[in-house]
Amino acid sequence: MYYVYILKTSLNTFYIGQTNNLEKRLKEHRSKSSRSAKYLRYFASFTLVYLEKHLSRKKAMQREAQLKKWPKAKKAALINGDI
Image (cartoon, rainbow, N blue to C red; front, side, top):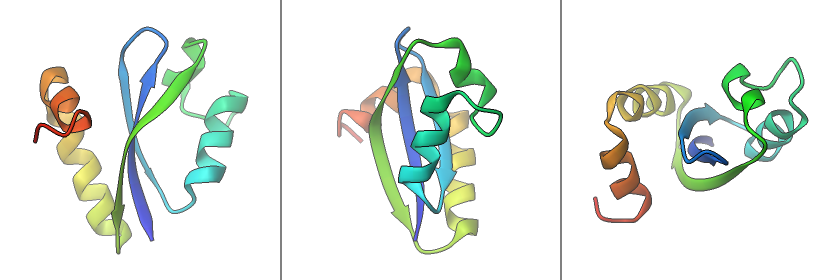
């Protein structure tokens, strides 16, 4: 199982990623280690606000790419369940 996730940072920005081990990936982001996303290291905290499950890495990567192209308002609508 693969996951596409959206994190909301302490400054109200969004980070989108994909992984096959969500718990491990969130720990990496929180630790601000070399394995965490550089973007997230600049924020005091973040919250998981959205999650999708996919059966293949290819589908997860395609969805991640699609979501990253969306404007912030459309991402917010997805998170709020308006899409």
